[in-house]
Image (tube, rainbow, N blue to C red; front, top):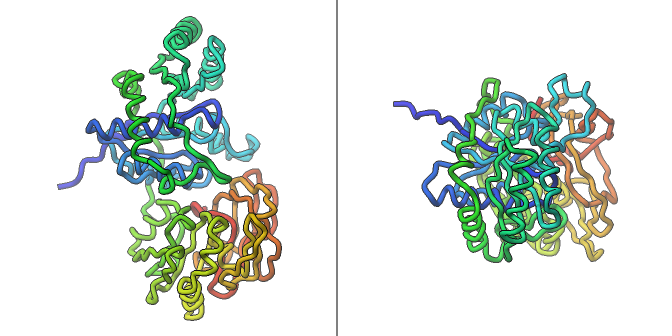
Length: 449
């Protein structure tokens, strides 16, 4: 007997801009639908490590990133189809129409800028727009009208007004929309509610595992949408997944080994489910360990992966984690592949300067010194060509990924790992380092071309 493939009837929760409250609304919807017995899966548009963990906590189910710019069509199709749920709630990224900075002729004629709007168009999932109405009344209808008419191929199926001041405010919003955008239903007016602001730090939201009372937060968000939204009408707007392209079961990123030790704790939390599960599906054994708990990578592993995260916030503990550092060096000395991304790359270096200007010795496996004391934003999609044979590929293989960090390179010496360019094709020079079987860069790899 074969398992029934479900329709993945979905909706995209988007907003005019970041900070409108779409994450809180999304989490409330996932928790409420899951708690009431719905078969619901979640997805997150674009490159994001933090929001998907909140999604998983809300629904008890792995959230998957769907990245139009960085994923091959086959990878995207396989990931979306693998959601396999009756209902899919997909949270957008940034503002609805915000994406990579590319010219029209640089998208291959398909309009692929990686935006939430483009993801909605490709998947066939209509958009429900979350508008922060706390500082406006009738003007909110003008915002909705502008978004509803901006692109005819991206339908705005409904609107949720957030941070509404009361019943009078809600009535003004409903009447203004009925008069100017009658074809877009108001699905709910969510009142301003204490305790629903998610704390942030330099790379986005504070991680779910660090939230002081995550369960109470989720229950409060779920109660808010249940009380103030027309859930039946909301669910009726969902449409089946229509993403074109045959799925690809091969891993997005080739595995660095057969038995892969993966750092996993608050300092190393930024790994993509599609990458890790791709390795697992390919038959690799995944061996998690915690550097913050001073655990060494498995002594029988033939590869070690240090994902990104917040090593700059835990530099003192990592420098004092003698078992971890000794074990990491031992795996490298044995010939195991060692690969680090962003924060993991920093730990492979010789030293890391924290926000207070204190230098902490790291693994010393690459000729790298980094500093978090002098911050500079590095952000954007990246296209990467391997300059040498490395743990993940032969030289010449092209990857797509993302960069997002504030740390500054103080010293970088050795053989370059990638030749990098931005989403618009601008040359960014060499990125990362490789020394034998040890390699890393500030780039988060998402897929290969």
